[in-house]
Image 1 (cartoon, protein in one colour):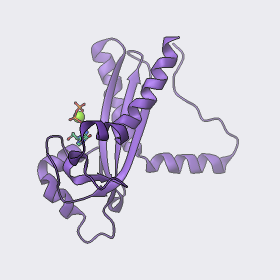
Image 2 (cartoon, rainbow, N blue to C red):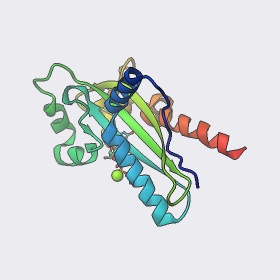
Image 3 (cartoon, protein in one colour):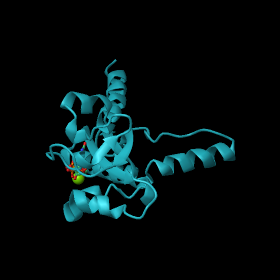
Image 4 (cartoon, protein in one colour):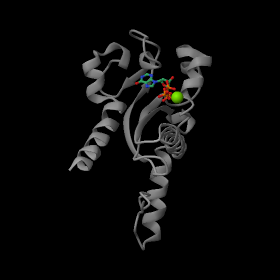
Length: 174
Ligand SMILES: O=c1nc[nH]c2c1ncn2[C@H]1C[C@H](O)[C@@H](COP(=O)(O)OP(=O)(O)OP(=O)(O)O)O1
Ligand SMILES: [Mg+2]
């Protein structure tokens, strides 16, 4: 099967440098983690599959914890994550969802990213899902945990990534 690796074609070194820098900002590590997970899942399943990775990135920490948020949350809790940012000039953060699709074993996963910008705040709302109580998307005045599921699913990192995946899958069907 032909490689599905996407190539950026340009003769302009400045474009390449800027595109690389922008992509690195949105999480080089996140993409590596998502690609490795999907590739492995396709091998184990022996067929096409979709995987999903979620990162929570603190601006003051250059994007960390990022894909390591699961372990930070487990060890530090909501309070500890807030305390990490004490003394830093900003509590800005973004939630990043990466869906990965592989057509099957040996087929390079294709990634679909969705990002929602906001701030880390003291926990508010029902703490049923991960770091939902401490993430307040910009312009909402509510944490994810205070929103109805419908509202969260209309603006979340996951919704944005899934829209891109859906669009891609619909082109495969024809
Ligand atoms: O919308 C979200 N709102 C709040 N918390 C969230 C959200 N989405 C993921 N989370 C948490 C779960 C885990 O602590 C970490 C991501 O880790 P991540 O590896 O992607 O998820 P996971 O290990 O639970 O599931 P999987 O088996 O699909 O890898 O952030
Ligand atoms: Mg995981």
